[in-house]
Length: 199
Length: 378
Image 1 (tube, rainbow over the protein chains, first blue to last red):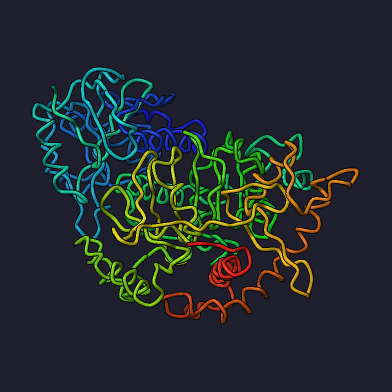
Image 2: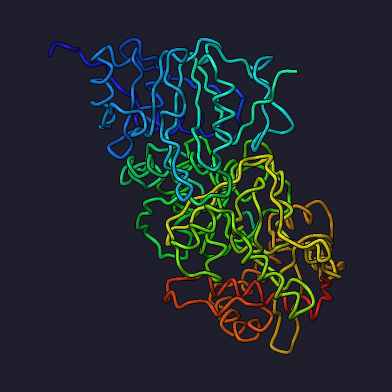
């Protein structure tokens, strides 16, 4: 193969820690936008932020799943395999992390692993690359980690995302946790977050 | 006392993570950190649920905070400022060794000031000063399963959590009332998190339970021997279990802190001599020192002394709180405290390495004594 492999984290220990802390802050404070700086230059359409999440958290114990857009470019899987050592799986419900470059074309949330009642932690975290990620009018959220209410604008989203999230919420404590990454930022909608109907 | 902490700080030339060649940053290898970080993210996403993790052997015995240390190691970054407390105190053996451990392996700045810390690792207390947004409180947990003493089988307790079947716990609290006339559980008092999972808040006195409710800081719990991590996100409801006719109540103390005069705080008993002399002082040493620095005085501080120096107080107090002394108290207290412990059977034999269990009974003993001598009301 003649693929020149793009480099991983410049400082693997500290970069991974910084990325993790951004993800932890985002998960602990759902629907807030946290800064996520990275200097990764992965092969397109893998965005630097998607790559940062994968390099910080995936390894031989945590398989990755790639959406159609990412799977279509062999260099993406090669890059992730080399830098994380993670298996890239074909079926979404085998993945610990699902990387999604085109959220509006992704399979329904129900296709991923939701865990079991005894082990609800054995579920997929879906990481979606979006164009817009900003505080403000969009999704009105409440739940653990949110004082009163948080509003966040995310685009693009899967077509019937609100209905899928409501179904996901009904599974609690099972469920899918969603991370959204945009250039320089990250936000989370863990399974506990309720999206209020617009009104 | 804070002057004595200086030896914990990295040498002036040390840059975080650069001078600690012998270890990876914060001791753990990167794969272990990733595994713990994944567990932490799931724990936050499912508040109160105990996520199993592949707990590693640490260079300290189980019971000394191996779970908390692993969680701290996984979240810690070079910019963090670390505070470690043991029963509220910054200067007991466990707190000092863990603070030194991270000063050595991660080169992070350490502090005794609650306000200055970004990460606070704690053994069995929550600081008196309200925590703020952005802080992380890491608890050392000996036995994470609140139902363990009621149902020893992991397969069964897991099923009970899955079904949210917490009848057993309510029966235990009810039997407390039937026996003692009130809920006699005083530490490790079970809480319900975000309306779903019942969780052990670690053996903190129930006095601290209300501080967990809607806390602005992120609370992470690590149990090393039992290999579980759980979490409470900020601004999350944490309700202490109770009954309508027996509402949850915290301990109160009739007398204020003997050193700083603080009221409405959790007090420790300090034995002064072998003739029954004792004093009650803030368990949160940083809180107490700040109050004394601000001019507050308790009744044991001699107003005639030229310098009501916290240094002097600290010295005598350190002696009284010497680790061996505390262990001996705990050993003696075990027998005395047992009858008030409701249905909880005697602690299982975990071997000599466990410091959590004897000290839990020490906490219990303090409360028993506090009730007798300081006029605690329930």
